[in-house]
Image (tube, rainbow, N blue to C red; front, top):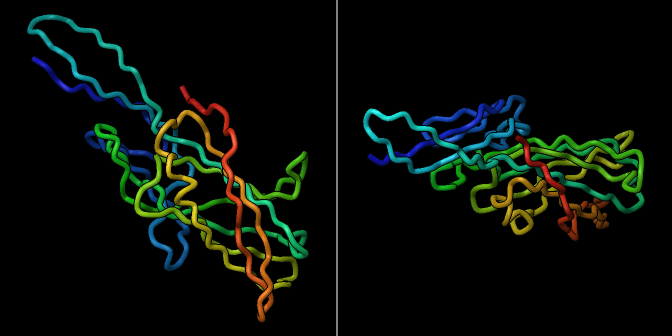
Length: 213
């Protein structure tokens, strides 16, 4: 007889039921933003194969495991007069996959993940801000970076962020062993009330190999 054999590794903050992997929820969600999931789950690996089982025989099978979690790093390069006064970037990504059916590769349950941005203080990228998360994938119609920028002495007042990453992340669900890094430039646009901030020029770079065995 022929059977379907499913195998998976244990991974922190991910539960598996049948062939559906689900990321655990996160605490401290933003008011009105919708459900958040854990932004750094463990490295889930899965395997699906058809096997033939014969009566009264001992069988040995080898499971070729596939990495199902991918690392994403976002880098923001502030420009303009107020760039040096930035003291914090509070943000989250929408459209992260909260669940994955690894039998058919379908990513679903779109949710939000917190982006814990920190300022780079050394090296060629000093002055930029970066955040790294791990995701099962992306899901839903769009992915957006949302949040706000805070400045020293509250001068100027916090500025809202809302940047569309849908196109930039369109291929995120494939090639998960390769980490993905995207960089964008934060530019100021003067307004009657002060200025607004927009991220432009999102460009992918080589994220390196993040295969976790």
